[in-house]
Image 1 (cartoon, protein in one colour):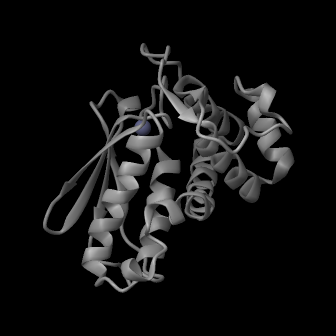
Image 2 (cartoon, rainbow, N blue to C red):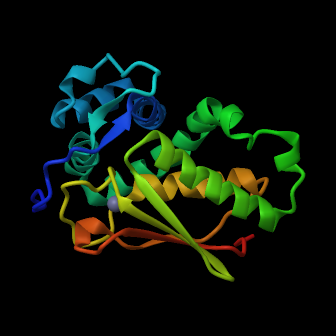
Length: 213
Ligand SMILES: [Zn+2]
């Protein structure tokens, strides 16, 4: 059984807008009743049928976000929970793009005309900056020759959790969909290789720059 990790108390927050995006994405994947059941099982009962407002106020703690992801696994089991979190992550990107795309310039023609390798590079940095600027999630990118290494040093997805396997599937799904969008419909190998919930220093997601198809 998973038990809360030692760092369960968080003074780190996600803005309402990002939590709203996560819940809309979960609703798309699981239906309203599914989301409400997960919210009920977590410490976010007050959000049942009452999603956060669409603003940048940092009001949902990392404890609550980690608890939400934990509740998803509790309810469906780790295997199905993983599948749902990956799909919800992919849906998050779509809602996120609508909210943040115009602000960040990645919906512009100039961005779309860049060659793929530059689009991946610029896109990854812009995407990391979005989290660093608007939330307490900290992302640092290592740009290696053949891969991007996406390091999350303050991670809401697994906050307070202790798992045997990396569990930030929501983050993996978001990256998968962002790569799909940036590349105009290609799939990439995206693996979480280290996770704070497993005792690692950061949640590390490795993206192979060469598309699978
Ligand atoms: Zn994590």
